[in-house]
Image 1 (cartoon, protein in one colour):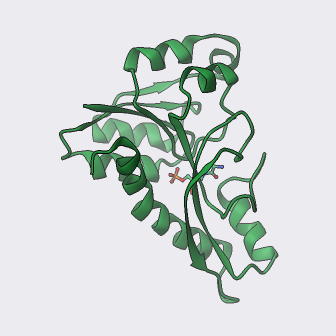
Image 2 (cartoon, protein in one colour; image 1 turned 90 degrees about the horizontal axis):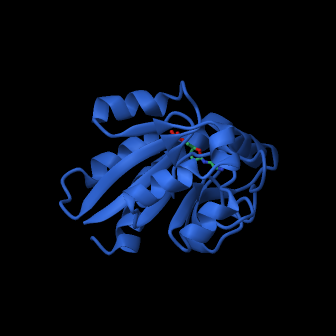
Length: 189
Ligand code: GAR
């Protein structure tokens, strides 16, 4: 059995998609979803999906080993950041080498770094008249959006696209590819 722990800060549509993708797979267990936002929609989704959900605050994350202890207890084979917006502290990266992956809604190294998340990314892609964008699934290191790339998938951007329509295209790629890449990493396909 492979254990996955997910981190999310917002809506959690990727979390829900990943949970549904693996729900009939007897080799995969979604141990828990951890969130840094007490009122995040992802916590409601977890409630409906009957998935363990835990909230932690900034102090617990950066000034204590509380999250590390929780993660160790779940013994994760993979830690998946699915719309998680805080930087991962070094103690977690050191404890789980090559076991933390993130999805970014653009073609890194473009449109990465602090402040580049969600719609900020799609607005910047639109403002710069890019002709393509996409998703990047990558390992997490101590710098935002800089770990080794695992998979990138592109989609085209036309002059008719708005940040909202770009977001929809990117989400579709996320829903299609993120669970598959997770399954490949865990070797449970
Ligand atoms: C996703 O598009 C994800 O790629 C992005 O946040 C969104 C979360 O959506 N992540 C980042 O921007 C990380 N820098 P969701 O909560 O509906 O899954």
